Image (cartoon, rainbow, N blue to C red; front, side):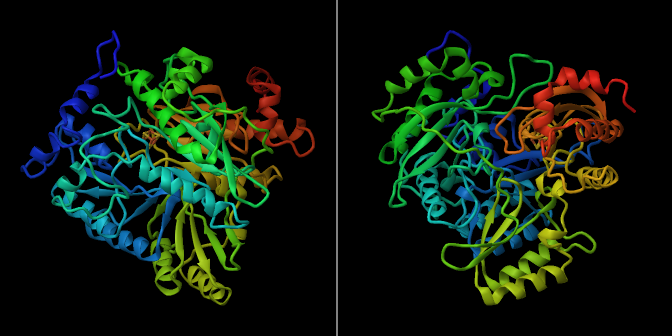
Length: 561
Ligand code: SF4
């Protein structure tokens, strides 16, 4: 374990004693208990699964135990066969829904313990791994989600694939536990050494995303490492601008925890980018806080030692040369909903998945509709960072079929959705997430419908306002970069953050705390009225409140009705 005077946290000891992610899961997997021990709970995360209980069914200490399983798929890409396999697996072993996550992965819920192994095995049989989807390692590597539009996107996604494979844990434990030792798929050769992660893996989760200049669909500044590909005159990647130290999780009333945007580290040549990324990870591995997990993300290390010292530590761990950061054009949010052209002449269709939940509901049969389209036309499938789905590689002559099938299943075309709905996100929260303090996903649809009515009433129905809600301050739906971020604070009360950037490059500020759910929409209405009456021409809502400042906003609105 790296040297430190502080006592390592319990999780560090659990990792050390796990024999490279084997124990005690290997001993507990086949016993009759409906749940695993706390030590196994921690190790299971590295294998892509969280032990949860259905919080609607809790009766005192009596809990209904179940497992969430997350896939690891760089850039969110699946083939038609893989998507259809997952669709079947969630019906067979889970609660019948697929959740598109904000890191371009899928999650399934409601798996019981004795079905955990066959479920993970079935996912692997479809050539999707769950290894490293959670835990203290590099999580799913994100990348600009669109298929190739102008010759750049596919090249960036290729680098995301290489990085993802290179940064997988090397232990054979995954195959021993879930695949009976049989190597099905991991993307890299198995060895029993962990050359990058060593015996203790990283101090905390670690997030990486890649994009092209101008496209911030991946919320680049919220990642531990953000990479922006830069191209030469022949259209080849010549190198990457590198951003380090972003991260959004915080704890209420703990001022030493906070969301943070990444810093501009510099530019690295294409052939040195993997080396540089591994060097950055090694700095965090060796110097990150291992005694307090609330201080263990790389953002805190950079704030503690400063970017200059971080650069020195990095230089000691990589031969890659870091050059000055190159100027970039402004970023835009990238949603890719509706029909879009690919560089090969085919089309892709962005389908909005409200709150990322793929489940049939009354007249909107989105799960069956997607399955039917994918079985019929066999497009590629991509999960986006905004919890939507792209259906790719669709021929011109199949577009009408796709539109018709989606319409027959009640799935609205892009032009029928409000901008508010398109730009908003909510995390799963209750009943599955053990950390949830408040509701999020379940109440968000009615919340958004009510807010759409307010925007209509105020005469700004087309305002592309980004609102994100989470059930706890972990911030899985990235609320701290939204124009309005609502973060579960206590029973049915939220912290209200205001003033993020529509493109996700500016942090929102805490505007009000402990706001009861019933007062959220009246509060937003007041803010909308004030913004509408006082903004500069075409000034976005978040830009306006960032310009005038939270204190001024609170003062101006104190007496508004
Ligand atoms: Fe759970 Fe909190 Fe993440 Fe929501 S933000 S899914 S409540 S950990």
